[in-house]
Amino acid sequence: MDKHSIVIGILLAIVTTNLIRVVPMLFIKGQIHNRFLRSFLYYVPYVTLAVMTFPSIIHTTLSPLSGTVALLVGIVAAWRRMGLFPVAAVCCAVAWLMDSLTA
Image (cartoon, one colour):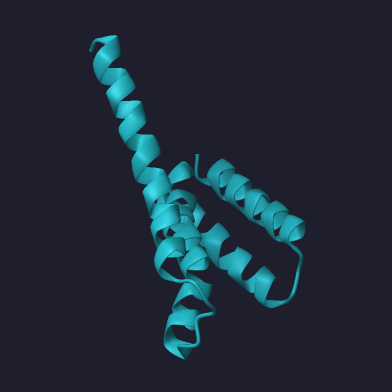
């Protein structure tokens, strides 16, 4: 691949990324009053994070079983109102223990 096509690719990525962010601001001037749209926009970051994170949790460990068990333990720990760091630590410990027991 030559330098010319790399520069064009980078410029297209910059334009595309900025258009996604700028176009909504051009068309939506005031506050959004639609309840459905506000709710949808509120949950979009959480859904995006979940879609990127959950498959990685399961497939990063040595076996999908240990990732799934760590995910379930993390959900229970978060449900019991543990903080972010303790939940992450418990998930890591469970995944490590499960991987070391099955290996």
